[in-house]
Length: 107
Image 1 (cartoon, rainbow, N blue to C red):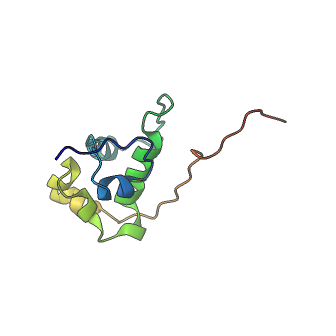
Image 2: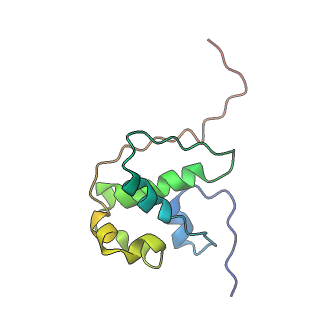
């Protein structure tokens, strides 16, 4: 059976759990981790998956989800034992402005 293409999903866990079509972007975790950048700017056009990627990073690194790495099984990042051990080992503060909608800006 073909997978459904879910449009507008912003929560990584919800997207994976629902079985919707997902292009595996977990290699971004490896690339980002191995680069050891001090600052990372994720600039993409509107509706390009920024919030979904941030949700994926939160789910991977946050101590809140320690031991819940099964959501990554079958994805690229989970093939490496080092990253399996890294999952859920950092405190994460996640902020999203995805739901903030304003039509005008006042000083």
